[in-house]
Length: 297
Ligand SMILES: NC(=O)c1ccc[n+]([C@@H]2O[C@H](COP(=O)([O-])OP(=O)(O)OC[C@H]3O[C@@H](n4cnc5c(N)ncnc54)[C@H](OP(=O)(O)O)[C@@H]3O)[C@@H](O)[C@H]2O)c1
Image (cartoon, rainbow, N blue to C red; front, side):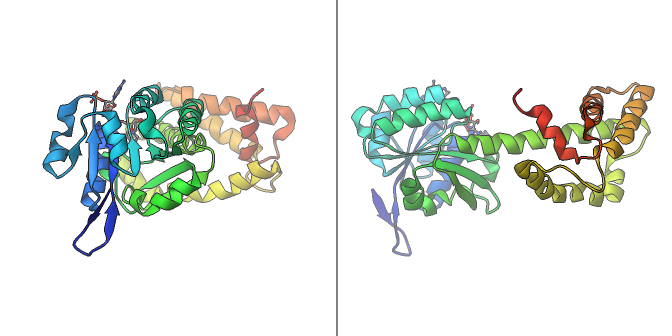
């Protein structure tokens, strides 16, 4: 299905299945981008606002899948995503499906394998924003799966976020990219919030601290390429800033926390990792050596 916009460019139709917080934002982005947009949701009333903006309400999943050359799915859980797509029956064959439903790599691969077996051109997408960030130029979306689908629908998918990339031919990989970002975020946030508890215990405003220390904290992101290189190469020897030099600082943080009655579990966990690596003979290695602790044993 195509339409003719004011500037005479034909825009392909898109169907969006699942109109929760995220699916509604995805559908609105396609509508705002001038694409004829068909929507379906289990609870039909959730389509009302989009229909009022110009979307077409599909009466069934089959109708939604058949209506457009690109089908986008965003629901809670990949088991639900597959159950819903199964309702489309043979309308699926030959269609392009982009599933933006979060899950583990195994859950996502299971849907991808099933869909590919139905003759679907399949792409999984991991969107790295909350609903208001959909369509922003800085919004990152990691895609994995069919490069044919990605290339054909690249400009339409670009409406979801300016920084979309195909990271793998394997649909399960984008979720790992997403988890890696989230895991890094939570670790960093836990460290910052522990620091905030320490500062506020002393009566120091965290904002004031940031005014003075913001540059030191921002500089942390500059360390990641070095760590990545060490982990990828397995070479951890370093002339400066080795684990033996981290050890006293982590010990101080734990002691300070304990003395103030602040929860010390988070820094104490770090202390355990550093102390063990030093005891195991890695005192002169970089902090990246600790990756071995997290690997399968
Ligand atoms: N919201 C965010 O900020 C955000 C950010 C990044 C990624 N995501 C991901 O986007 C996906 C959707 O999240 P959301 O926030 O939009 O969720 P949500 O607001 O809770 O909406 C859930 C959607 O899934 C549908 N659904 C759930 N189980 C279903 C089933 N068995 N059969 C049919 N439909 C079913 C719901 O339909 P009903 O309306 O009928 O219940 C609704 O459309 C998730 O994978 C989420 O992790 C969300």
